[in-house]
Image (tube, rainbow, N blue to C red):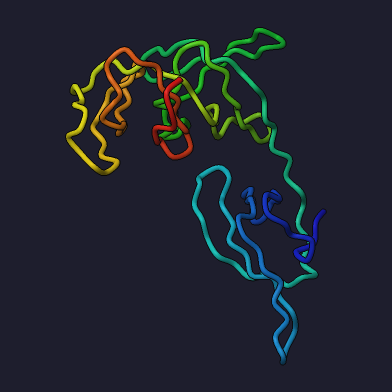
Amino acid sequence: MITAGDFRNGVTFEMDGNVYSIIEFQHVKPGKGAAFVRTKIRNVISGAVTEKTFNPNDKYPTAFIERKTMQYLYEDSSLYYFMDMETFEQIPISESILGDNFKFVKENMECTVLSYKGNVFGVEPPNFVELQVTKTDPGFKGNTATNATKPATLETGAEIKVPLFIDEGEMIRIDTRTGEYMERA
């Protein structure tokens, strides 16, 4: 059990049959009246973010989120198969559970699979990946004085903006959290 007065960023707890993770918290002690805890919480399963205030003495059961490193194997129609690196067991995960940033993951990459009580609710790709540019327009030296960008298609099919000096066939590093070009690999 955890009390609302002990809330910190990243703490997960159960409330009303759902699992929530704290994004932001603030202990408020007004001049008049009782203290309270103002929070911004995310429903771990659905991803919905809400703001809620708690009495500091409210108690909630702690929720333990299991984070397991698994290798992405292949895709078959709308199911994506992942392998447990220790037991070599393969599990299928529905396309609807995968986040938008999964478009940067290619086969044999290791991802973190998030589950609660055995139910998978999310997949986190690595923070940084190195991918090859398969299609982009040629860039010309001296045609701009600012940091202009152009669209590029990567080997996974994802499209991002890259600087003008990047050519087809080059390996680049991408931040999967923002979907932005970082540097040449």
